[in-house]
Length: 542
Image (cartoon, rainbow, N blue to C red; front, side, top):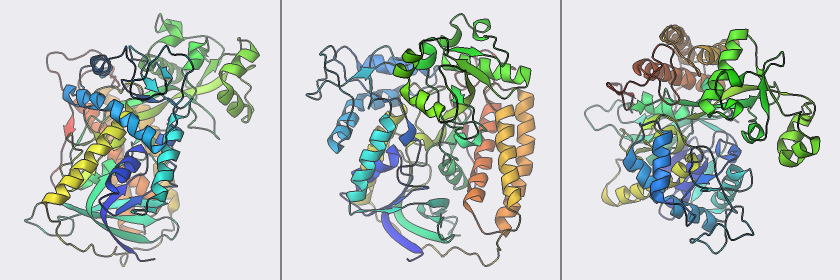
């Protein structure tokens, strides 16, 4: 296989955003699609809920827009929200046309004007209507596998599985000064051969997902290491609102299943949060107890874990009838039973877990970044849709709407402009050697995730942020020296990117002198209505 690849469009990332963009572009271009793992691996595959869209006759676009604005704590871009919601119905129809099988219902209580079938719509936190279309409790899996199958069959799309993108190749990185900085492709590590390969393309699309792996506990798969955010930042793109990290209150605390979410429905059916001594604690924090909003429950759990110095708390539904538990939560029951936890008899060890990155690479409504010919879509991008807190099931909708937008913009751009022919040089390894100290990567990896969890997590203070910033600077220098002297590995690349993203998260958090949405600091516990900072936008000069 050649170590040099040429395509019209290079898409980095293979979740809902990347696959959707590829399929919209395939009629016009040759596409190279880089997957960090296997094609079906990614955050989309593990999405349990559904996709928010205005499909019911009793629902309205204005209602969905207002719910989103409220959830975003005043920081959503209203124009972006309006556009996204207005295109929700068409996005769902596109999925249906591709073969995605959503759950239907036998009754006619919910009508679906866009399709002959009546789809079952459910309701989630923050929504005033039933508007979540889903495929049982595995919507992401249905969307991911259906789109993956379609992509595999498309001859215009070539897949590169098990590749780690290293860096974008730009006009300025090639030493061509005095011209407008443009993106010409990327370098990527073939994880199977250990070789670095070059990907030359007229357009590059980042669809790399979020950065939740920067935290010790996360609901995301291992590949969510902020690669796209870090690469775009190093290439001169602005980032924004990275202080808004969404945490899910109850993730299983277990060495063999540390990314398994325990659904909120368990608490909805009477499960109680308890301390290691069996004491229930949520009533001390909120009159709604276990049914309080996610951010309140997550902060309460975080407070108790830090106060007591324990590893986790416990979620207990064993007081309910065993048959009720098995029939209502068969997936959780069976999964935990394999880990020797019988939820009909004992409590579940849980911790809050980093769940979603609301900020990201700054883009406009066409998904274009500050770097010409570079686009960003999905969780890697900052569109203004989510504000200070993402509303449930708006994330996959964002992927679909903005992936289509990006594709349409690329098609239009290609018709109007000529792409400069610049050959990407081969990756130079002449000055590096194989590492004999991989323990350095492993040690720094664990230290980074621990300090981010303890100092830049659910509850923050200025002192904690300052401590984290100082330590990040030391880790950054260590990894920079390591990166300069040794051949790249997958772990090294991820650590390098996570350190970059961690630094950006801390900088955004230090700039917001208030508590709003997902950012809560003990030093500024109230909203700053007088000097409101809408977006914490960071920029750099290359």
